Image 1 (cartoon, rainbow, N blue to C red):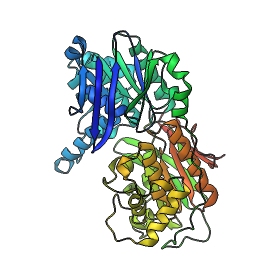
Image 2 (image 1 turned 90 degrees about the horizontal axis):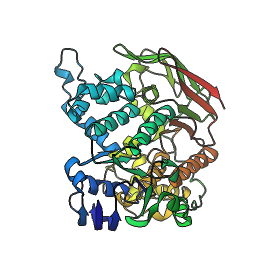
Image 3 (image 1 turned 30 degrees about the vertical axis):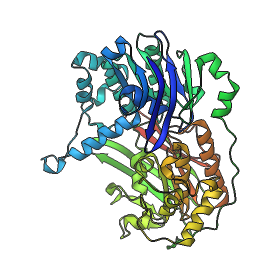
Image 4 (image 1 turned 180 degrees about the vertical axis):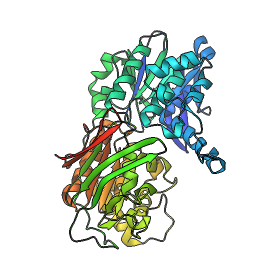
Length: 486
């Protein structure tokens, strides 16, 4: 495959600029670069998902005959959104619509059920073959999409950060399969944000920056290049003091924990998700909730944010009020500032950065309320405090994914929440932006009365402020939840 002068405009902005690159037989390539470098745009051009580009892409006979398979996060989101739209559970006698099952998706890729069973066993998902895609974990979805791609027997397999959001055990499983593929006749293009993510089987590396080719060559030469290292690890911008806390239109009890769950259990049909959970978040504590994919972290969070009706009738006290004693879901939610990948991906388009931050006053995904100078000033102060002061007037859509996540952190803090809830906040970020957001969280914890709940698939990556761990530990029957001080 050969690319010559390939350029792409996305949302009226240049995403790729005159890309010249050859992928020759016998090579295995990684495309490396920070957030916003153009890696996904390149993958979309090669896979045919972005047909409107300038320049030339010449494909060899094998690529024309067997095509390209592209595995990415957006693919999973589109499948789940489609099933959500077609959900007809309200018309079913059992009030349940599984939607597209794992087995049916895999059989679309390959009608050979024996091959489907083989790969399902190989990656440890044979027990979920009859489960709907909306009801499987992130790790299970990644495995499902990878198997579907493998079963199509493509000439080129593009993997977009395939280990993102996976617990360590699942990462090891996926890495073994990727290593095997790299040693096979299948050509791989692996999209990576960090040099550490490049497996040994990669022979060549293409480095992109701001839509342009920054460097390309053999793995050893590129990873030893001082310019590439500087690109991936730029200096962190200075932080400023935090703004004065915004007034809170509610009162908290003078004493007692912020959150208390005692012997809490949650089941959906025959599936038990949580069993006998005890968790107390005292004043001054910052908690890391960790555990493997599918362990129940999301269900636990939905209980304390008011989103899960399973909280009623259980011993759950939030901000001094027993759940189900008359408080509304909005009474609970306004005490939280939240940042998660779903909010990020679904955020309203066409807004300036300052408007995105101001929307945090109203807890809206977009800005639909009247706002004035006081809110603008608070938003600008929070942007400055997190080292983003020069982005105030920028269009949110034009920022890199990592800077967008930082802006959403300022949005979460602008109303001075009691709890800052961060659900996998470093997911999808390169190393530089991971350091940025972890440093910002510690800055907030050290200089405000906001307490942090940091959710991660493993406890290995967390801010220094964490002084409580809530771990989901695998057992023969499911998971035990263990709470301990750090």
